[in-house]
Amino acid sequence: MALVAAGTVVALFVAIVCGLVVGPTTVPTWRVVGNIFAHVGIGHNTLTPLQSTVVWTLRAPRMVIGLLAGSMLAVAGGTYQGVFRNPLADPYLLGVASGAGLGATFAIIDISHGNGTPTWTPLLAFVGAMGAVIVTWLIGGRSMRSNTSTLILAGVAVASLLTSAQTFLQQQSSAGSITRVYIWLLGSLASAGWGTVWLVLPYVVVCILICVGAGRALDVMSVGEDESRSLGVPVRRVRFIVIAASSLGTAAIVSAVGLIGFVGIIVPHIVRLLVGTSYRRILPISVIFGAAFLVFADTIARTVIAPSELPLGVVTALIGAPVFVIILSLRRPVAV
Amino acid sequence: MSSVELVELSVRAGEEVLVSNVSLAIEPGTWCTIIGPNGAGKTTLVETMAGLRRPSHGSVSILGQSIAEMNERERAHRVALVPQHPVVPAGMSVYDYVALGRVAHHGLFHPPSAGDRRVVESVLERLSLVDFRERDVATLSGGERQRMVLARALTQSTMVVVLDEPTTGLDLRHQMDLLELLKSEVHECGLTIVATLHDLTLAGQFADRLVLLDGGEVVLDGAAAVVIRSDELAQRYGMALRVVDVDGSDVVVPVRHTPHVNGA
Image (tube, rainbow over all chains, first blue to last red; front, side, top):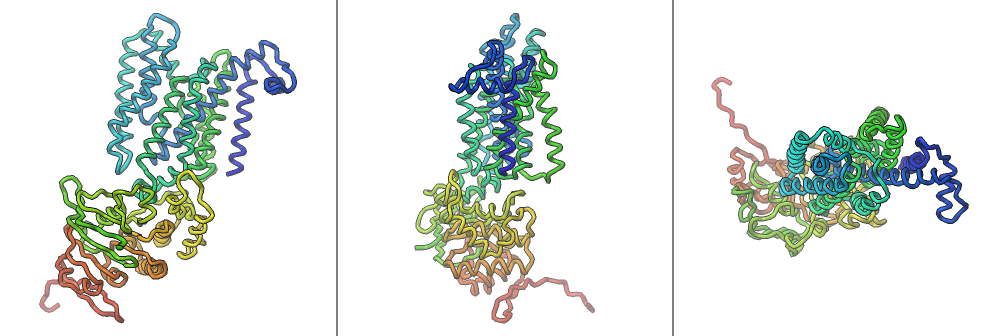
């Protein structure tokens, strides 16, 4: 466990450095490190103004939003897998993705004659995402005594309905709008600035703390609802709190950077293979591993075919799937 | 003060009455076994005692306090449950599984204290599970698994333990071993045991008191030796039963009705 934690922290550090120094504009690592120290009054700045702008205005906020998105999606996925006792659960299980997609589509096609993505897209995506989860909960949340499958099925139904509505809206809009919707759906950190970081930071920090804090409760809940209650766990209250936190954090991230797939389902599974089945270990390690993973993926996405970019979701799948397969072949798979 | 007291307890599932007007008072240190044919309401009754079902009428009190007034954590301090089909989460070690019984004591946001760990160690020792402590729970045999589930219940350090068919799936030797273990806990720790059992011989040999349930109602309630020899028992099971004395112990033998064949 200690070895895995140390390795994950090292990976995170390397990812942060890569996120800051790798790119079309060459910036030596030691100068970036020197610049960081200069910011706290140690030594002096050796970056040129251009390098400073590239590092601190373009790459740093993108790297930080990558850390936040990766950690939130990974911990939300792990939490969902624990609370639903379902290995296929991911952060989009209850309709967050389709709700956000519909909200964003609504915002984007609303300016069908423009060329950009409107500034209120994140707001409508957030409203759509949370609206979808609330409707799903209202439909399926009351009948969760015996199992959680009703809630999952309600999520499937709500997601199908909202995706249909989104498809209809796209059909009614211009080709340009469809392209912009499609780009948004693929997810990207390219438009993230410090404003985006400050906007999502409180949601993500609070939601991650709640999810990680629920690790012990999720461990107990692995024996099922009735047994957990007999062991003293207020199962329904815990379930409501962790689903609300996971959904809120995911909605905040999705509204800021679009739909980034794969991280939420694959990172907790990789971590589970490395540290075992206890959510007290899986969730905190997933926070660090998810952050490092997404920043690495984004560094690849923005550099491989520079000055163009690969869709981030494509890169996460291209890296994550082989890594998962390798770990799976090295270790005995364990249950959720 | 009774360990468990049921007053005019009824439990419904929709329109169906599962348990009807049951009143029982079980004294501390007593082993009370609920017997009855399939569908008699045994599991519903013990689940209601453990606070997992809400009565439609009447009340359940554990050690003098109404279970309806307790939250999950308070209930877990007073009554422990051994379910008929426990969920065994693969990948978890035996130690971690047994230690789940201490969650109500240290809470969801604190690690187990030294005292909690001592209790877990002591129960592992008593139930001969020390050698299995690092084993994955999914790799245990049926007998080892039932002992582990019992260990989790004992780790809760409650004065009342409710068991629903604890011998399900065990061979005869392991059934006896498990029930002997429980009996020793009753003697040494003064536990109150409420168990459901299908095996009438074992029920009669281990329980102090038998309660025969049928159609959700208490039909017979009394000392094990009396209930086991009652004619009512055979009627309720719908078959012929013979009770024979083997070295001072009652053994209930089902009698097969075979058609008489001439010359056979």
